[in-house]
Image (cartoon, rainbow, N blue to C red; front, top):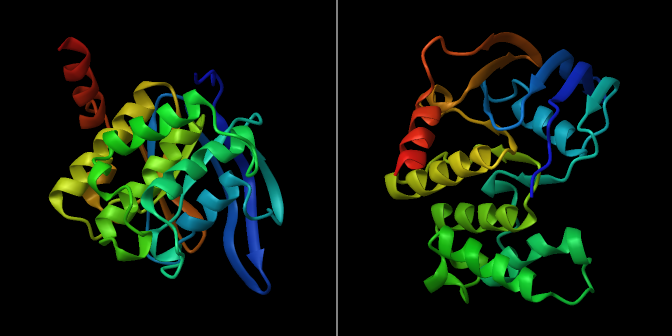
Length: 232
C-alpha cells in the first residue's frame, strides 16, 4: 500500500554529461495522488529529469528528495533490447524482484500480482509471446504491467503513449489514472498535448531548464474521470 504523504522534490538540480548540460538549476515538486506531465522538444531534459528521480543518473549539482520511496520506472520502449529472449509473463514477473530479489522464490501474492497486472493491461493472450515479437503498443503495456507489479510510490513514465493506437492509449491512460488514485506520485514525459491536458500539473522544459509550470485553472480531465469512477 502506498504510504507517501510528502511531495517528491528536486532543488537546483543540474546534470552534465561531459561538456553537455542536460539539466540546469531545475527546481520542482511532485505531490502524491497527482499526475505531472513533462513536456518539451527532444533534448529538452525530460528523460534526464525522470532518470534523476529514478536514481539512474547522478546530479552534478542540487538535490533529489524522494524520501526513500519505492520507484517504478518505465523507459521508452525504444530503450528496451529487441533481442532479449524473454516472454511477456517473464517481463511482468520482473516487477517482483525489488521485493524478493532475482533469486528469491515468488510468493502466492507475487504470482497473483503478476496475474492481475497482465489481466489489467489486457495481455493474457500474449503472456507466452516473446517481447521481441510484440507491437509497440503491446510492448509498452508489458513494461507498464511490470511497473504495476512493483507497486511503486513514485511512478515514472517516459513517453508511455507515443505512437500508440487509440485502444492502447486508453488502456495506459486508465492505468495512470488508477495509480494516481491509489496515492502514487506519477510523473510522465510526453509529447502529446492531450496527455498534458489530462495532468494535474504540466512542467515545460527547454534546453534543460524549466520554462513554465502550469496547473490548469479548470479541473483537469484526469480528476473528473476519477470522480466518475468513484461515483459508479
